Amino acid sequence: MPQTVITIATKGQGLYEFTGEAANFVRGCAASEGLLTVFVRHTSASLIIQENADLDVRRDLHEFFHRLVPPSSAPSMGWIVHTQEGPDDMPAHIKAALTQVSVGIPVMDGRMALGTWQGIYLFEHRDRPHRREIILHLAS
Image (cartoon, rainbow, N blue to C red):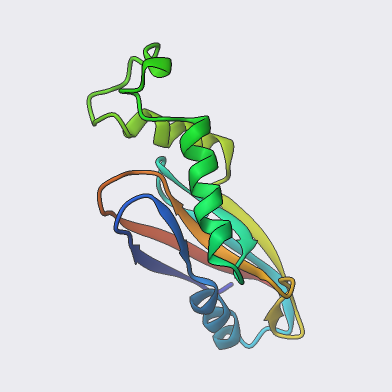
């Protein structure tokens, strides 16, 4: 069962598409069918499958999650206790808990069975740059 680790360098909060890297991995495995598991090894980032045609979708998702879970320095977040790593840390953990750290994607005819406008994204929830590790594992 092939697997690999890819690293994505982030520049702060936002969505970072890596559909191409995942497609290259699947292609290199030469499996006609199976299940690709994508797993992020962090507690303050997550994964989503989302539209990759319109950049406004990324902006709107970022804004939605910022409004839903603002920094711990916001008055509405005064209940947060975990603040040692900065005002974006606990909100990042909450955002990661609301989304997912792994996704499964069927592989059919040697390709990921994503829809026409679907892309795979690392969803970075921290303000400062990070190097995020993502494990790709193909079971056939």
